[in-house]
Image (tube, rainbow over all chains, first blue to last red; front, side):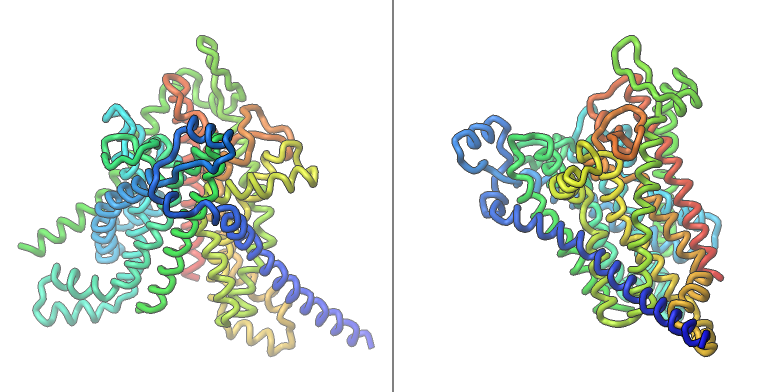
Length: 289
Length: 285
């Protein structure tokens, strides 16, 4: 009889754990839905053609429009252009360097130099983004005597590099050695085998890694605050201060006159980042090694 | 010839990393030395002054170190009861099922949301709720920041823990089931002891993430430079004080802010290193 109640208690505990796990897991989805909902509902009306093609209004213009009861004119085109340019420059440098470094780490694995570089890559990946901002300020902004889009791209480059190195290295390690050996046995030179056999074979996951790296840094605000600084006009000049979408959100957050633009900009950024994420997931699934 | 060139190129690109890593430590130390020399290293770390008046300038890092520690630990405490169930859900109960993939996608997307949007959401949606519930007088403060921080680190802790839970050998679990154990007992007696060290390291890495989080905290913590007295009051973290004051700083203040940055960098580096070493050890068992 006693055993019977004991068994019942055990089964009860078992069921309780099951229910608790399911309920708490389901609760984790709430913040995602809440954030998406909030941004979508509030940002939907603002997002339009002019929002994407016009530059940010100055505070005075915005204030006048608000006093007259009109919607605040202008948009985030300066931010979109800035984000695009800085990201482009950062990617153009970070992707080749990152891939080569990743190949190096996987080729010389076990070697003391590769081990140190590998640890330092982890270190760099874990470095808070605000520190990257400070360091770019010291390295680029101070010597160049001014904030610039170029400094912003350097900061983004430092943030992207470890992510690309890691994904390349992990992929290269999974590839079977026989692939490389077959290439070499056919008489291919080392660099040809690496670049024309190994790299195409791992293209899918490296590409996924690159997309994820871009989606990570595109929303970064902290490293751009003391490097690119921001600017109200659409600027294609990398020598001058430059705006970016997350920087604009920060600006709107701090300026009561521009607050009505905040949700449209957030919706734009969020959509971009989440689409990149989902796309990367799909590619990873399709190109699985 | 071309092979040699290619190999040189490989090494050259790998040297970029030590150059950046060493450069960060060198530059931060150089620029922080002004503050350390002026106040003395330990004095700087343990002082809670933050006087910006010219002539009587005095800076100390203690309020911000405290703020960082408080928000991080509180975020960790709030994060555990959610990330552990998610890890069990995806790694044990519904492993390989479609619903687990759905939940994993949800947490991945949570991890992808930029921190400035978390900050906005916390400020406009969560802060009024905190005020209504009387959890903190101004709505913003250490508690609010830690709560949003917790949501941000759940994905990292959960996905990594889930990997380690999946790695528990199934013959161990089957042995326990064969002896008549229930699933809850298998989880408690087999899964947690076996995957424990891996799960632990996952939380260490989650701490590493929370320490340096900047924008969300800056928007939610209230930005006051005194020692935080309770969890309900406002404060500042090492990252948020830099974000707030770096732009208009120069001279001793700039150097002090960089010194705080150096401290933050060192703390995060140590925590991350411990986490990585533990993870490598857990993976090889």
